[in-house]
Length: 117
Image 1 (tube, rainbow, N blue to C red):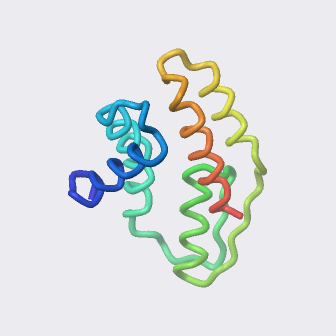
Image 2: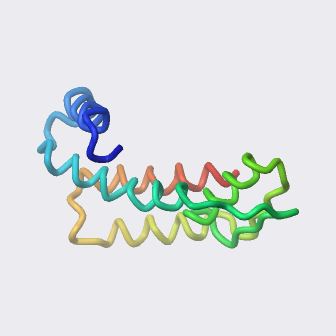
Image 3: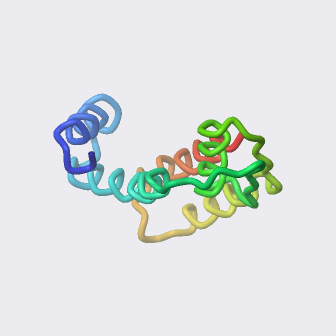
């Protein structure tokens, strides 16, 4: 998908509608690097279990929520927001992330967190 015309069109439309000031190639590679780990995680074969547990809301929380939905089993989350706040602090302090991408990355991790809830 990440090499498809559909992905290209999504990034193009996003740049045109909301981020006209951002170079297209910067947005393309930033979004690709953002969702690639998520897609890799979500493409894994999940084991069936009686109960799913995650200690964080990030990628593990997404997988727990996915397993809950797929197998109709309970999901327990024992950490609430720490992972997301830690990512936010790292992103704010990161000198390698351009300013206009910081909010996108922070929103991304908060949205991952929302999946776990």
